[in-house]
Length: 149
Length: 81
Image (cartoon, rainbow over all chains, first blue to last red):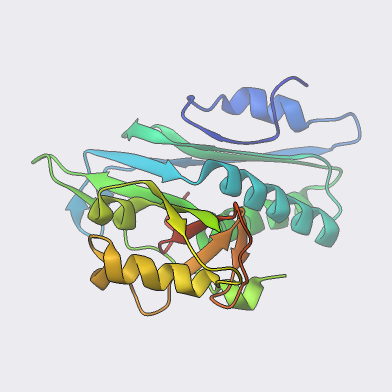
């Protein structure tokens, strides 16, 4: 397959291509999770989002999370793309595709990937509001010393 | 020795720069670099008491010893996905 399985970048996410990229003939399931930009957060109407990433480290962390998942659960290929830059309502910000012989493991891995991404991958989201103001979303403080090594 | 410091999100906005080169003494720690940013850069006083740090794209701790050419990133609380 020509598309990278792990990618962080400004291009719109091709979720169908990611799904196709992970599938193999040994897989009975391909599970796709797509995270979208929604129009509200904590009671405020959101106009758009902007994502900023430490691209190289984010890809490294995502690849590490994929390897952790594959060592815990028997699954096939896993793909994860996170988009950066300005996104509008309804745009996919992240897509996770998990191919697996059996569906149970696919659900576990898909969940693990999104939860770990949100906990520790160096990506930041800024909300844009109708009045033109913006605000960085309060994030998750990663306990680096605890997880280091 | 020289290290490069990377800033992101709110840290970047307050400092007004996304990166800077720092001259530090041999054997300096990542924590010492954070202290320099805290003391000298715009918004430094607003940095939290514990700042997550990465050195050369890997999570590090304040005690991590630096080497010439290292890239030290100050990582605000993350909000991806």
